[in-house]
Length: 104
Image (cartoon, rainbow, N blue to C red; front, top):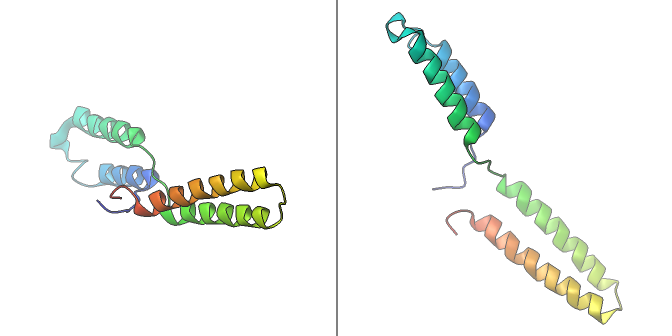
């Protein structure tokens, strides 16, 4: 599996286009079958879990890491510095997980 993202809206639009096709409008299918195709398509697509844009998620994490580094540079409170370093470490690990994706 790759990090490809599938747009729920694009899949729904694809199903709608399929339902407009000559195949879906074939009289031999019958109205019930066409309705069933639409219902199953809608239910399946709407129940799919959402994905995220890896690059955007990584960008947000990187921005947060930079903010914490800036805070670290400007704090003289050692307890605060320890908390910030712990937070930064957690964000570094989160960034690694996001970049690895499902396969990681």
